[in-house]
Length: 93
Image (cartoon, rainbow, N blue to C red):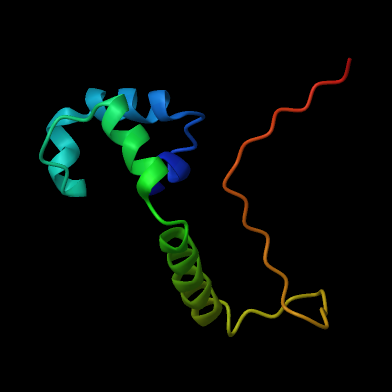
């Protein structure tokens, strides 16, 4: 799922298709079996959302450590996070 997000895939089908096309390189991701839409769909419905929450928190901590010496021109009273896992297409009728 994280691969799909980072690769900016729009659907499970698109993610699975991309992984199938890169079959020879999947060992880097520790994927050793065939990828199928059914497997990804089942994993998506059964996986707890807190896994992604914990992963996002660890990324935030890493970003804070990298950004500690960076001076911003903008002063904020509170910390602001903008994390979105969905793609929304907006159409004007």
